Length: 303
Ligand SMILES: [Zn+2]
Image 1 (cartoon, protein in one colour):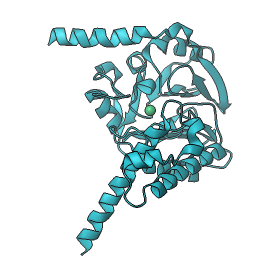
Image 2 (tube, rainbow, N blue to C red):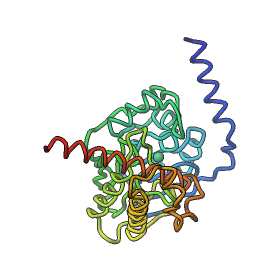
Image 3 (cartoon, rainbow, N blue to C red):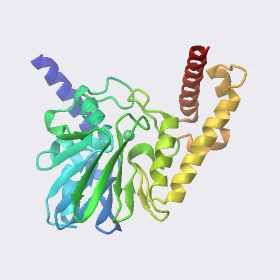
Image 4 (cartoon, rainbow, N blue to C red):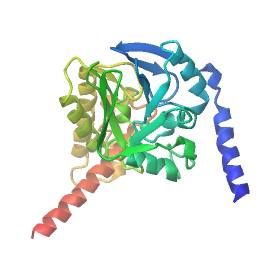
């Protein structure tokens, strides 16, 4: 067991050393009323700064923690008291073992569960997290941190990007941090193995946007500071993708046939990045197939 742990530790260490973290620059952008956005590598960090101290939303990767701390020290001398994780992915929680030493980590129940278990395979592959990386306070539906004259609310939305997503609202400053329910890198990644669902994600984003003013400042999970209009473009595009794939599936087409029909050709320019067009078609196809299965079950019960 010791040897196994040692091997796992060395393997993950080697992976971390593969990247040249020294080239990553942490940039600080003031957003509004004591809220800043920090970019580096991994998910965007949102921070609340004020007389009570600092709360940070997500913390990128462990090797960047000293530089993130340094960037925050340029804004305030106050301590980082709280860390909120929007979801479990390692590019949003990687800094937890470092920040958890002096700050209280807060997240949805499923974030802690998934950090404890680790992820066996795929893009999200990660070893079980060490104790120091785990949220100390978890919540089921919502939690509010009253700090810096702001009622910072973490609201859980079920089955979107993952099954443990929270969207973080800063009502006084009129800012919202979307986690990876809203990203600007092209076709979005939906972590199906982690309980994610594309249609759920669209619903969640629309629900969140309906509850905030039109001039809200939007921190995406990845990408530049955005507006409500940018988010609408994103959900419109996703709904269009679903409709296009649905049409291509008519007559019981197979996945190969649907892919061959190129239903998402008009989005090909944004389907060359992290998530390729065909992967996205497959995601939608499987989701719609599942729905058809569920609909059948429902109607069978009815009879
Ligand atoms: Zn993510």
